[in-house]
Length: 72
Image (cartoon, rainbow, N blue to C red; front, side):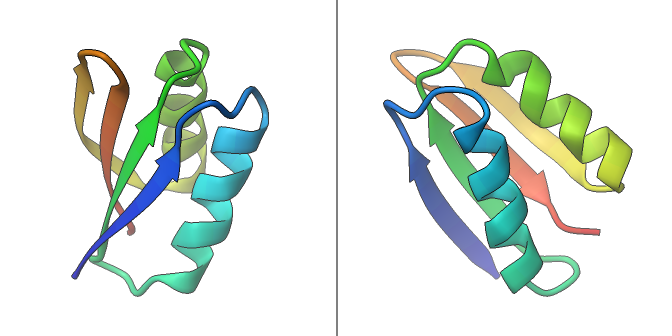
């Protein structure tokens, strides 16, 4: 199942905390799409996912930064 979280205009560490909290609510295999504006998330979210065993499926940088994360 796909889920979306809007993290625009939030600064570190809030985007990572909100991703963590949302993933805790989801089932294994669910996909979380997260949209951010903080450039620090390009490093922070993939690092957090790697440490916690989740998979970053996609990162897109356009007007915002978009992550697609699979909960493992």
